Length: 236
Image 1 (cartoon, rainbow, N blue to C red):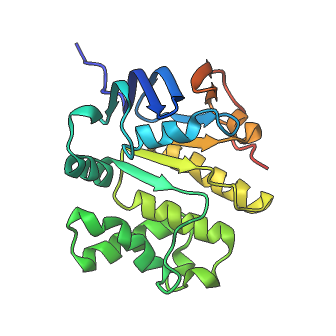
Image 2: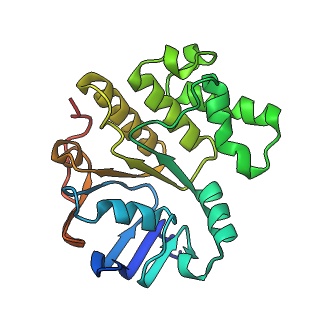
C-alpha cells in the first residue's frame, strides 16, 4: 500500500499576532500538495503578505504549526531555517532584486551561494536555468540591458536554479506591463506543468482566477478555497 506523499506546505491552526494587538493571521488551516499551482489572493491588509512570510519561513507563527517540505518550522533554529530555505524554497519578488552590475548568469548563480556549490558548477547550472526561462540569448546581459519582463525571468531562473520543492511568487507581474506579465504567468504555468509546486501571492483577481486553485484571504483568515477548474493560460 503506497503512502500519501508529504505535503509541501501544511498549516494547522496557524496564527500571527503583532503588538497592538494586530491579528495578521487567524487560525489558518492549509495543505498544499506537491505539484500544485495556486494563488493566495486578497486585498491589501488581508494577511497574504504575512502568509508569504510564514510559509517562506521568513517569520514564525505566534501559535499553531507550520510544516514546509516535511519540516516543522517551529522546531528549527535560525540556521536550520536558512538551510531549509536554501534547499527547498525559491522566491520571486515584484521588484526583481537583481545586482545591476552583474550579468544574468552571475545573478542567477548567486541563488546557489549558500548551497556550497563550486563557482564553475553554479555558472553552468545558471546557464541551464536561464535557458529554461527562454533567456539563453541574454546570458551576458546586465539588468539595465534587459526589459522588465526579462529581468523578472532572470529572477525566476535564480529562484529555480537550486531546484526547490516550492516556488513562492510575490506579485510577480506587479511591476510589469500587461504583455510582459502575461509572458511571466505563461512561464510559471509551464514550470508547474514540469513539476514545480508554485504559489502566487497576489491582489489581482484576474491573475488568481486563471489558476487552478484560489485561496482567498480577508482580515487575516481564509474566506474561500476553490479548486474549480480554471481556464489555463488566459493571463492577458
